[in-house]
Length: 260
Image (cartoon, rainbow, N blue to C red; front, side):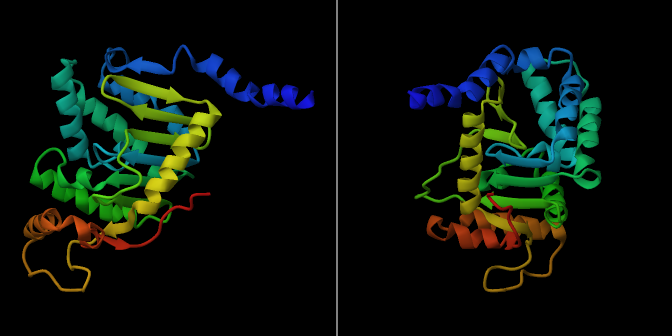
């Protein structure tokens, strides 16, 4: 008797969350961005300000919180042109920069995971990506930040997924092709947290180090941009069977956030 009642009561939290969020959990990009890209950036700031534990996984782009201004501008400019939006890209870049201040001035802990393909392809061209790699090195050294890259491999148990943010244990935001999904149902939030933990187990963690391979062999003494070009070439030509060691060329082991 009690078992049946307890089973129903155990679902109450999920049911309440579902009812509260059914109306606003899905927003199309064209609706969110109708007032402009700046407004879309500003609308998310309060959520970031009240969050203490951030987890971000990206299979498309470098996460917005750790992008350089040039990278952000290139990404938002592509969106603005593709969707035919009003040109407020410069203002939107400034709004995202304001949000990034939380990395340095807030009390949060940040864990970022990106797929290796994010570093291979990129946006904005070689110079923008070289600058972005330098920035990842700086961000990865922050005590409140964990930064990891998930290597490409032919035998992964957890394959690449859609990009998502986890805010504490209260909410997940998922970016899809056509819109922006907000998830607050505890069971689903837990599923994304589990996926993040599994991807983190596959990742190489640390900071950008395009100066030596796993055996410690130094790269030729050339300019920084040339070093980046050599690094990208060597990573790109690495065989799949050695993809994890090839990434050590880019990322030296450091730390990763606990899955707890």
